Image (cartoon, rainbow, N blue to C red):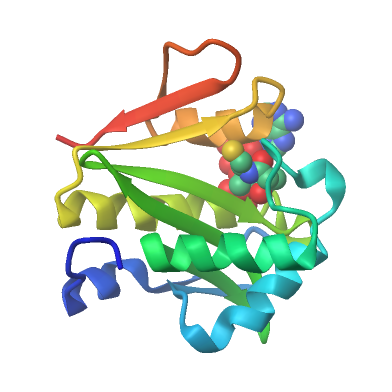
Length: 169
Ligand SMILES: CC(C)(COP(=O)(O)OP(=O)(O)OC[C@H]1O[C@@H](n2cnc3c(N)ncnc32)[C@H](O)[C@@H]1OP(=O)(O)O)[C@@H](O)C(=O)NCCC(=O)NCCS
């Protein structure tokens, strides 16, 4: 996993509890093996207009394979409300950078959860020694771009999609 060791201090950086914009308590923490079914349920019930760049995969088998790929090649953080997983950020190391993918379930969007999770992940990536954070989105995804820009991401050259980068050093 990850290719780098994650210390307890770094796990602590990733874990946090906060109140979203509606006052609900949201727990943000690393994904555990026991969370797998709840994560699948989050993606299975994600509405089609919330898919981005063909993700998440639509068939159950492809979805399970994608999650397995993210888990075994990187590191994942989830947001939990009660017993439900409502957000997921996956980090995949690539050439010294951390490549990010994020989804927040439509029932919980616009409450500050995405921004909080990204802040935790960015702090983690900085402490873990990554050079920067990369991500790709779609030009029409104005909400995601708003959040990324707020956190310091800037556009880098791209042909058809939006490649964004946040240097950490
Ligand atoms: C993009 C996403 C991760 C953001 O997570 P979130 O929890 O909804 O985001 P937050 O609540 O932290 O922040 C949303 C921000 O966007 C703003 N926003 C909402 N709709 C907007 C719009 N149409 N245009 C511009 N900004 C918008 C909100 O006002 C808020 O900004 P503020 O805090 O400055 O007021 C989430 O909406 C999501 O999963 N979307 C679908 C999948 C996706 O696009 N993933 C990214 C793949 S690249």
